[in-house]
Amino acid sequence: MKRRALVGMLFVLSLITYIDRAVISSAKGDMAAHLALSDQSMGAVFSVFALGYALAQIPSGWLADRYGPRLALTAIVAVWSLLTAGTGAVGGLGALLAARFLFGVAEAGAFPGAARAISNWLDRPERGLANGIMFSGSRLGAALAFPMMAWLLEVCGWRVSFYLLAAPGLAWALLWWRWFRDRLAEAPARGPEAAGPSARLSGKALLGAGFHLAMVQYFAGNFTFFICLSWMHPYLKATYRLSQGEAALYAMLPLLLGATAQWAAGWLVDKLYASRYRSWSRRLPAMLGFLLAALGVAALTLAASPLAAAVCFALATFGADMTISPSWAYCQDIGGKNTGALSGAMNMAGNLGSFVSANAFPYLAGLTGSAAAYFLIAALLNLASVACWQRMRSVTAQKL
Image 1: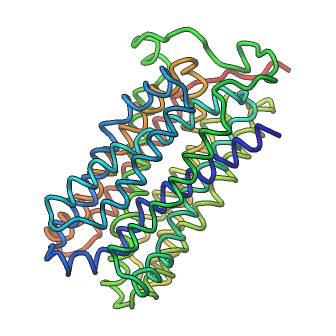
Image 2 (image 1 turned 135 degrees about the horizontal axis):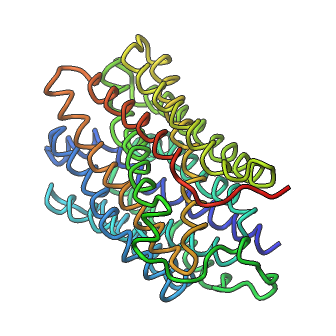
């Protein structure tokens, strides 16, 4: 029961995390008008979050490994919630950039800390679905952020909206501190295959396990997905001349479908692990996901209506999200006592992909006159990631 409650708590954490980071996309128009910001300036605002988030991944993962996920997650969720409120108090571009950078630094520890909590409490056969459920919260949170922020903007304006959004995170941090413990007292004794390696892995061992490839593929996955958190909403609104509400509804579709991908991929990871195809339990779902993502972003170059574009974004998001659960299970497989830092390193590479994505989209659109170049580059990155996963190994075939 406690293990299910842990997954539920991490699902809510993931939901809050992405609500807090995605709402700025919906608020872009009002904020830019009030603060006199250009699209290039807003691109910097979107990407500076990803930069802070990426740079703090390894330190925040180390924090969870060193002091435990109870203290680490309590502190970082409280801090980023206060910075969410601080976003509503900015008076210009400089203050906004600082607030979003520090917000990214604070949020960086969320998933490395959650990965360490899962590693502490759950065995390998349970981790696929647990990761899938947790990350599905992020997609639901991002999807809810668009209509929620549209309503809040209508009712109370963008400043008060950010003030109100600080409350859920502060409540979660308090509950986590009171309920969670770093070790589950009734956890059964684990064999090495169930729990993963306990020794500290050397850099050479990590390279041999394919960890550099894990970083490359996570860069590609985040490059593809981050468009949904940054430029998808304004792209749909501007390209197809939609209202704020219409764009929000179309932007919800890819993120809601992404949530189902998290569950599906997590279930598939655990199902394959329990079969004679154990060695493919991480690789096959990820390879399939990257193929779907490549198809979806490439098809965006041909989308002639907002519905067609939303469907293409949905396919790309579904595919990219299929890669999340196997990626984090892979880190938990090989990380052992260093799971927080290792998953943080992978997430750092992914969020450098987000940083590049947020800046590449407006730059390439301005340079070429359309978004087609961005979409084709994303497709190529996804295809390269299929090759990465073919070489990545973290579990061996089951002996039948």
